[in-house]
Length: 430
Image (tube, rainbow, N blue to C red):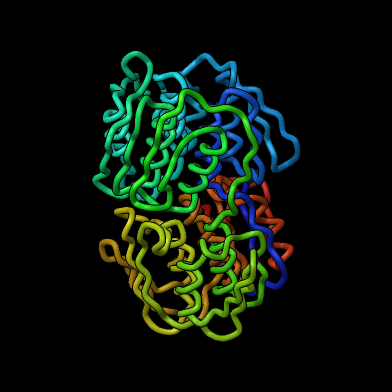
């Protein structure tokens, strides 16, 4: 197992190039299953979730060719199987997008129950099932697999109202409905940028989807999708993570290859904290020269503050002057990482969905563990800001969503490197 060693206390300076959006890529790659012909996807992030999804598609019979490190050509024309590999699907949460894409392609899907991050509480797929059922699929769960099958192997358009705003369900049902017979209307839909990206991808392949990015999405089903070329949007959360790192550590970093509008919800909170942010066409210059100020944060569906940035901003607020309140408004519990921050000297108390963050003068290096993707990013930020050396284990979670995080941070002046972990020699042992 790999671990990261970080010598903290060094401000960050320089430029960082943001990769393609993880949350878009993990839906767009499964959506390529619906395309007959060569599908060229550009700006693909080099992360483990993408690697796993490509392996799943390959095992289903897809032809995969990398044009370069960030461009892949997929040809799923000759796929005939709607049953996925159990072991691979168990390793990634986004494998549930294969249900919608396989249903759309074959009218049937048999997908292993998804794995991925666990950060306290259950992440149900009941809204996904509600949507598939409304489209005419019978959904059952047996032997660790989700089995969905449409009568006569083709879904039928329907009106669907989600009981809660669900990004995953919106994207999954949007895929399934793209080739359904008739019109589908999704109400109370999620509005995140990666939902718009998936809709744009599907439309570029011949789908007819309108309203993505609003709370009502209308899909006129088409008979089939054909090949084309599409570039994935930049990663809002990766960009926000580097911005939060500058807030916690200090320095000045130019964050490149972004869509500034997608960053507004994050930029606004960092500015409240005293971080300077200058917006340009496709970059943000982030500067923190003075002590951080307290603020209150509540995560909400887009365009609110993203839940995927909650651990990172909480880590920065642990070093702010005064008391801040961070309220998790999306997931029932996402605070497993707080005990790790406390090991480093943070003063945080969690009461139900709210973290009460008393700012401290400094954090101290310690052995800590990444429990999930974004909590892992928070551990990296904390280690960069801390006095002394930290050791981060569980970094496989971090590598699910951050491309080349070590080299990107080292280019900004961070003292961070990866080593192979010998468990008996771990700082945390004993």
